[in-house]
Length: 368
Length: 268
Ligand SMILES: Nc1ncnc2c1ncn2[C@@H]1O[C@H](COP(=O)(O)OP(=O)(O)OP(=O)(O)O)[C@@H](O)[C@H]1O
Ligand SMILES: [Mg+2]
Image 1 (tube, rainbow over the protein chains, first blue to last red):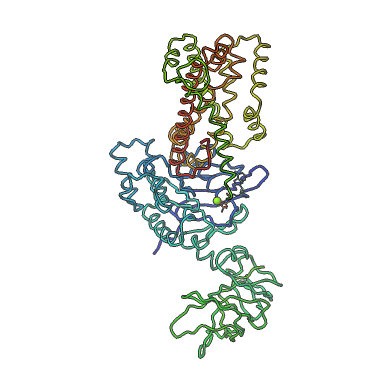
Image 2: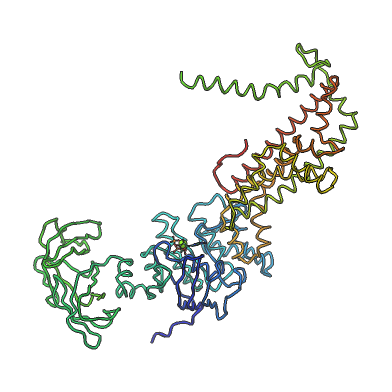
């Protein structure tokens, strides 16, 4: 049987507040970051991700609260004495040094001999795929190469925690996707806790073991990617992670946390407690439904469980592997988005075509 | 043709600016005691005369001592000011910086007279050190302007990265900040040196009985027979100044290139 107890916390954030003058940038952040996990801080621009990361690294003093790192309170501990290393957004490669000198920079204060240092640098460079680049001038590297040098430079010190502030945002799409995969592999290899700051929800979903979604200096939800996507605890989180359809609904009755709802255009559904993250109260509410949990039925198909609805295709967006339809369901006040995988023998509907939809109440989330 | 008028204007302007300077070497090598055309022939006599004028040597030594001290003092102070200006926010920052940059636009005579008045009030003797202080005041704005550029061009996270990798603030300055702003420091040293070497008004007011080179030169103008010698000295000074400026600009540009940045202006 798999051991399900989570590994111990390497970082404990306890009611962390940060003020810049009057501006309340961090508003009571509490969280535990576990040993060896790939943790992401996800949120829109200005929500305080960088501030929190810099507070962990020691570059920002916090106004109140506690940060524990590896069992030690970090109050008053300067960045150079913390067991963290950082990959800066600009990479911060020293332009006057060679690649090898950059990577070896952190070893200056260690007791390693010259030979050991050389070996460590060679290993670190090989790890990030820059084996023969040691003698290059750092200012002559491409964006992706700088990023790798920054990684090697930070990892050579074997920190307890590696902090990455939007490390991929300066790269083009192809390079970014490649580096995402490499970063995941690297993290598994070295077993170091990674904390990644990003405003790209897809990046966070792809890379992380757990994600903290932040809005305005607060953590709105902290969960693993699947739960975050399947069971967002608020409309705001739901809208920030992926695409979510909302339909008005009436909560008819609530018992034992289970809610009986009447959804506009779809009909009756029974939701269990997990589907009501904010709780359920009788009265007007909204349900959320992901585009992929609605299905357009083609001739001869019938909905499993017999849940179906009729509507009209109002817009078609073709992506190659997928087609996104905007469908106005009879009896619903707003359009919903439906995504369908394009498969052999499955034709793409045209605008104005009638749509026969199947839906599944298990995919619904209730928001008050 | 459009732009033709502009071209003529530019040529006239340059002629007006540089023709007098071209006259300097012309008469410095001219074999005649009168500064007038036609030229008499080539001679090195005036340069030779420079060599056996002890008062001149003393003035030169004074000027060098002052210029070197000013370069070091103004650049060191400029280093602190420029760093503070680019890295920190503090109350009254624009006002304070404005005050530091003020000598750039203040008439030098006023600065000189005020300094003299202060010295006399304090009952202090003027001497080399008073000129050093006056010149430093004058050079600080230039030093700050150059160094501010160097600091602004430097990514702030470079210093943070060094600290993050275990260095102390002090060793970070030595290992990262200093090498990256070094070209700016050299440029500032050279420009301050040049400004101080050429400066007349403050030196004249504050020199007492220890003349600097420009003050000595001015004194020599009273003797028409010495004029060609003055021309010779002027030639040397101009050459030296231009040389120093070029070297300063070279270092400034090299600094930019090392940091991998675009050139956005400068003194040359
Ligand atoms: N040094 C500072 N002084 C004053 N306000 C600051 C300072 N640093 C950050 N802030 C403010 O704090 C808020 C959070 O900033 P932070 O850099 O943490 O945002 P972020 O989530 O990293 O955003 P982004 O995705 O744009 O990087 C912002 O509103 C910002 O303006
Ligand atoms: Mg940020």
